[in-house]
Image (cartoon, rainbow, N blue to C red):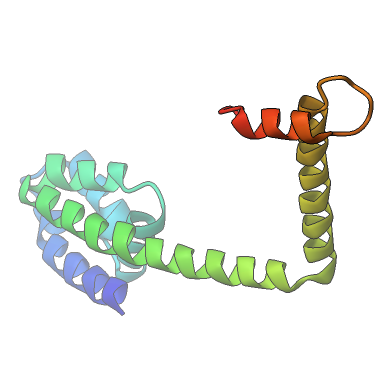
Length: 150
C-alpha cells in the first residue's frame, strides 16, 4: 500500500517535468522511463525497495531536483532497511523452526554432538594418562585437576 501510494504521488509530481519542453529530451525520457506512467512508477518503487535503488535516486537528484535525494534516502531507510529486514527475519525464523522439527536433521545434529563430545573426552583422557597404560590412577587424576589448561 505504501509503495502504491508513493508510486502514485511520484508519477503525479514528475508528470510536469516529463512534459516540460524546455528540459532536454534525453533527461525527460530518462525520468519518464522510471516514473512516466503509474505502472512504470510502481515498478520503480519495487526496485527502490528490493533492488538497485542507486540509479533511480541518481536520476531523480541529478535530472529533476536534489530534494529527491532526501526522499529516496528516507524511503530506502524506512522501507528498504527496516521493513524488508523484519520480513527477512520472519522468513529465517520460520525456516529454522521447520528445519528443527525435521527428524532426520535433529538426529544428525544429535549424532554430531555425541561424536564431538566423545572426541573431546578421548583427548582429555589421553592428556591425563601420563604413563600411557590406558587408565587414570589417583596421581594422574590429581595431576589433571591441578592443570590450569584443563
